[in-house]
Image (tube, rainbow, N blue to C red; front, side):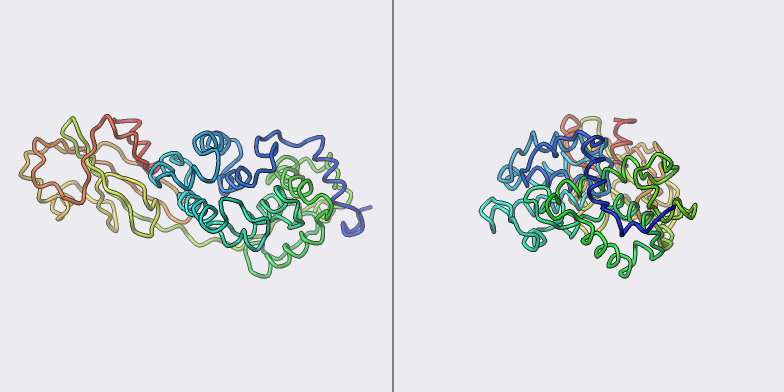
Length: 353
């Protein structure tokens, strides 16, 4: 008969499971807070298998916080290219500078001080504090939410203030005070490997006798989430302008998606537009007399977390550089791969350049 999971030692069971089933990952072979921090920043919104090569590349390129702090942001963004959520890379670079400037290059061994670093929230601070310094702060990521919500059949949505409070208190109550590092790793791996989102193997789960959602046959109803608002549609018209030797780029500097990344000159509109309409816009009208050749090269719908980019790429061959906007940077084609671009732009480049 199922009993409430509050009456048995969940943490001990999870830790024993972890010792046998844990994933062999490089950041688990160290207590270096710098390497742990890099891994946690990468794994925000990223699967382990996707993030692992980026972790190895970043550690090889920037083996310590000083080398990362002294790197140029453009270099960091290029190394991050393809991983998405680029604010993570910008914040990572800023935080490295903070550690060097404010903490003498030594990561603070205090949860509250870790929260002062750019891009470090409660989850990342708890992860660094527990994994590097064995401070008993419980982590709350998607895997942990799923395990706890199913185990206790918690119907409060996880993406609400009330829900976050409930889960935070529960997680802090369950953490093993003597082995906070092992417990946090254990519950996250348990969610990633055993208590998976769809069709979990509940019959062979060590917690099934105590899982309230399993007892009621409602495992896949948890965790509960409030509906997310509809994604916003945006229409991007890119122009690959080339004279066969160079290409022209611009950098995204506004507080928007892909900030600090490079892209081809762009016209954004409220709907997909024709070539004729685009050529009448001021961004392109000045180069019309350049005896240009223009063609539609590529169309792609690129889905992000809160928006869908409906992109069209146009190739424009020019015979003269006259009248090109001074806001655009001329880049030799041989050096184009040195500039960090979005995955959307990278897909075009892979196909047509």
